[in-house]
Length: 145
Image 1 (cartoon, rainbow, N blue to C red):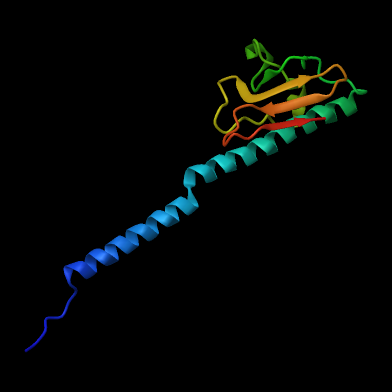
Image 2: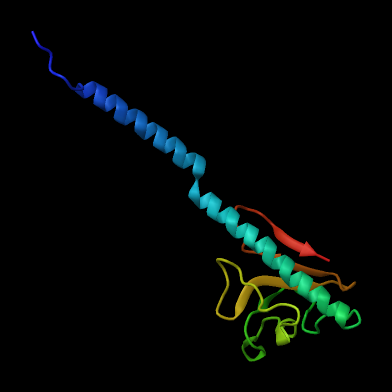
């Protein structure tokens, strides 16, 4: 008596089930949305450091004076020309002739038409704080100097 070659239905279903379970485990381990959010947060850290470094370089070159547009209240930084910065902080002095920064960086997910998505303020001692309030994964991204 000859036995037919091939797999039984139960063997095929078992292999498909094992492959499905392994694929689910790999997708959970990789978690693309979380990795994208972490990447966006890393970009935010880099961007706020760029902004605060440009502000402090400006202050060094101007006898310790910060850009006059920085206020004690936390206000979003304008990314375009001064004419379109109504209600936003104009830091175009940092990008003038590309002296301190080529252009102001923008938030990877929350920049508006005129705003960068980053906020800046100073305290009574002229300590500047730049923050990224739209950070993902419940992280607080803020630098003070």
